[in-house]
Length: 300
Image (cartoon, rainbow, N blue to C red):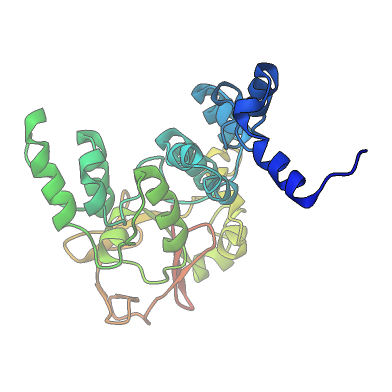
């Protein structure tokens, strides 16, 4: 009969051990481990882009905007590291600054570079100091770069942007973006820049070239790029003046406008001689405008 007592079933179940299994069955059972993956066939938990060669990966990242590059950096540790590549951020600076004024392609001077000093070269230190209008140290040997770096730290202006960027060009990119919202010009900037001088009485009398009216009113100021090449117009162009470090404002060449004293007021505006105070504005492209009802200065 096919029936079996309870005791017999228990005895039979206990006898079902690996010792009594055929060798082929034993080998099969040992090999059947559904939650174990062969190391040779195991896939690395990573994103598909990280399998590319580094050169190709950097080339791919170069097509991203700054915002997209920041987002992509969170996908993996490799992409996070590559997202701080200096060449990527230098290219982003070049693209962003091409439509801005007073932003040559060099490290942005108004950033606190203390955490990045070890990454600065001699030429970069000099560019930063020049952009700040700081006193340049005397001729130095290459091994004296620590003197330049000390000067970079000591000359950091109070309005410098502070951050924790691992890339000096990334720091420059975001510091420049933030600084565009600054509305108060420094005395160093006032003295470093050249300025177009436009007085309303000469302008309205037709004493300037035909594009001066647009120069005064056009927010885009596209005329500034072409007015010097206007060879068919015999009218004088608007003068270029400087605010000199000795406290006087005067023309770079010629006699107009005559030299006179100026001061920076406590609220960041400019007082020229006894004339009404000039209020300082800043355009979205970074250009400075200093004006009262009679005279306007526009940074070049």
